[in-house]
Image 1 (cartoon, one colour):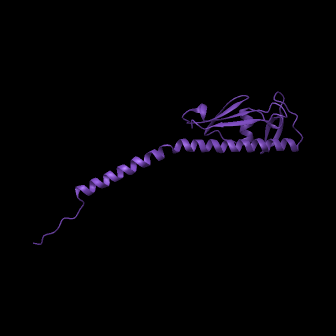
Image 2 (spheres, helix red, strand yellow):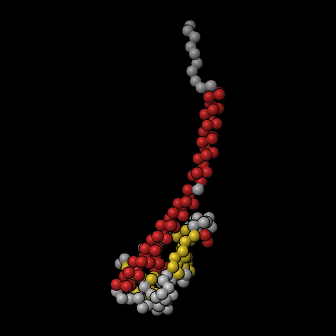
Image 3 (cartoon, one colour):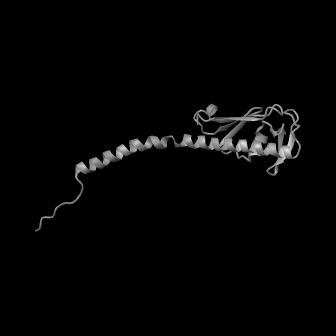
Length: 154
């Protein structure tokens, strides 16, 4: 009979592989743990950019159709994106319906609440009060509508 040498991994080799995998996991897990918050913040940033663009588009449409004379109390309707957006001094009024129409926004990831100003909150945010967009109507022809964003609690 010939002596056949057993082939396989030694206990030391197996332990070294397990330790190496443990070190990699300890480094990688914190990197991936924060991805949901970063994704929510990025989605909110994109919506904020879309809101600023929509404000400009609606204002431009109101300017072109000579409809800047609306007030917060008596809005003037402007046709944008195949729908009607009520405006105050050329900007969308601060109602959820007007902002949704101006943005062409589906509510899936957001909640919209309030009336002058309104808040657009991310669903699933760690702290919704600090993961939101706040939109305020224009108060005069000289003071345009404003939108602000907070992403600290996303």
